[in-house]
Length: 363
Image (cartoon, rainbow, N blue to C red):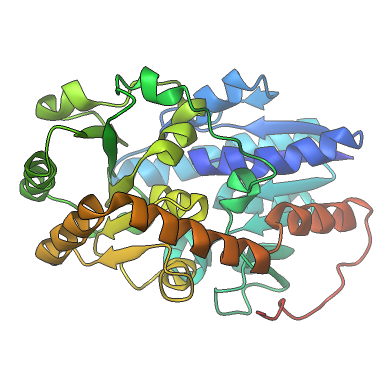
């Protein structure tokens, strides 16, 4: 079986990479389409020595993103024509479009669902199968397969990820130091139009709150775009494939993005999110209200965010223990998203009609 994997975001490399390992272990042949210029997509694929066709560079403005989508559609279509995969697995519209044009079965994986707006509307309804967390209301597309859990478990589940304890030394931290990871998002995605996160003044207030907690608390900063000059001395400077070790080692993650907060949540690390997306992603609402693994604040609620930061700084061991217990409860409930993806890929790869079945019921 030949499988084409379409990666448009760093998390796609991790999710689909876990799927690829399962498929290749059983003799499947795989090929990736990368997205140069988008976070570390190309770098992660290169570091893992995955067979890759480079896609067009990522666009960062409205017009350039539309141009990128057109170019990516063309590049993906040409790749499908030459590689002739049995199945395409994608988290972006281009893979869906190429599959439809070339009559190749497509699995479209999403944890945004209709919240992604245009990105979903030009992809989900055209895919043969849509896979997603069960928290997302469905049905999505023609055939919607769900799993209890979160895409981050595909690569951060306890059977797939073991944190590297030496990462603290790589961050310049002493053994007695505590540290907060501040992750700032660029908000350049198509679905991020008009979205806002932590303004520079809010970032400075987070820094001041941490400084008031004492010298044992250290701040490290990761950004999706260029690091602001005033934060450069605090920048996380590790290889992209070690970033999840950084997240796992933190005493607290504060971010205005989605993915890193979800990654911290499934690792049992206290996570605080502040942006205008709050309440819109069903899986993150579930992480917060069902498990207590995430706390979210609107972009206009910085005072409440800082109160939550002080709460964790005041009792970090209790916060971490509480989150670890919540994580264990979540893990006992969750399913393996990779197993769901693999089953669908194999079903489509055999050329069998897709069995229509209702989404998995939540336990």
